[in-house]
Amino acid sequence: MDQFTFIISAYNSQRTISCTINSILCQTCSNYKIILVNDGSTDNTPQICERYQKKYPGKIKYISQENKGLGGARNIGMRLAESEYISFLDSDDWLMPEYVETLTRNIKLCQGRKPEIILIMPKIYDENSRLISDWYDKTLFDKVFRQDGEIVNPQEDTRLLRTDVSECRKVIRLEYARRINFSFREKVKWEDVYPHFYLMSQCKVCMGVGSTGFYYRKGSSSQITASRGSGWLDLLTVYGDIVRYLDSAADTVPENVVKEMYYPAMRTMVGFALQGIRMVDAETRKLLVEELYSFFKHLPKKYYKALKKHLKSDCTSSEIRNFGMFMYLIRHRGTSRFYNSYLYQEGIETVVKKCIRRDKANLWR
Image 1 (cartoon, rainbow, N blue to C red):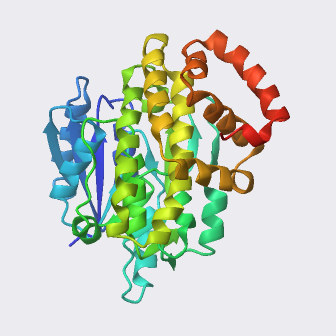
Image 2 (cartoon, rainbow, N blue to C red):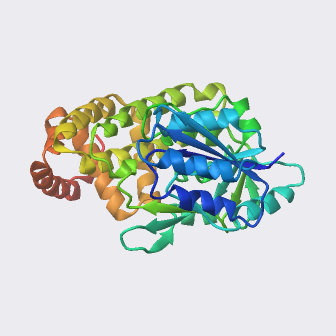
């Protein structure tokens, strides 16, 4: 049995899908399979996938389905996988050449203690500048994992809950995923956010491998972070999933782990909310702001306390200012409406910054 299965969801990916597939086929170690899931593409993606499947029938399985979103495509891939580990790869990213070989070697060194999750270290490729930079949480990753192959229990070292939410940088043991009944929500964007907290909080054996990963393509117009439409409203569905999980997580994970999730969950929710307000089109913006106002107004105070507690020690000065200002404005209907207009938002932010400097004590009330 091959040790790894790469699950690639492809939607209108004719420009990049060949690079993604070739990066796997060119690995220095061949103990892998590939599952290609065409998620209702309307371009030449199906024909490209079919050509690869015919050329490499022993390596590649090809599935075509009506559009179910990234989560739905990944779920089908997980059901079809038969390897020990699964890895998700987006159809515009590509693997480093020794990815499979490096993971195989480190798993062999585990001496029977098989990791449930392997965290790897991607690189960011900017399509516009063509520059490569470090992954978002590299500093935190290097503090937790001092060397390749080190194993940490996330329920003991809860800093792992604060790592980036990308599921593509997690290599997951299939037995573990099935044991905890893991699946993605379908037909919803931002599908990585809730699974991060579910998978990491349930995990007891997490390995770090920082010497290899994949190249994440930043700046592509096909990415959900580049969209401006109603897809941003899916954030509220994802936020609801997070809150419901934290309300019930004490049934399956230690109480201290639940408490430690409030801060990274809150930081993630505020961060995506700010990004959404900046990116979304004017028509959708008003509805998004209204939904965010309702959500954050009724969010239990323990989330705010957790964010306030860790901001100074864990965030940059810019994040502290932006997060504080957002919380200052969004929880009151009158001030939240300033986010409806870019012009009014700019003016009110200037005023709020002055208020924050004068009255930091009232920032979180």
